Length: 61
Image 1 (cartoon, rainbow, N blue to C red):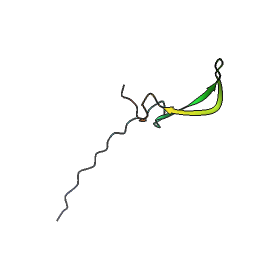
Image 2: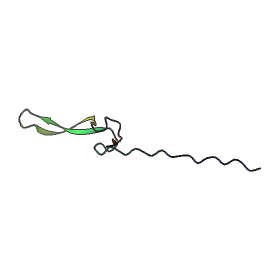
Image 3: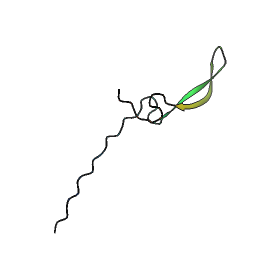
Image 4: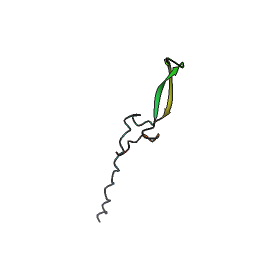
């Protein structure tokens, strides 16, 4: 007796990565010191990506 054939699994389309954070949801920025010149230091600070709000997915615009 032949077995019943299962329907093929559908693949969901993967959302595109955010162009600003490359899909991580975080952006690193250089720390600046000083009131007038704003001298850049070697230190880095991470923050939430404002383009995708930390989801890592590109918005559909």
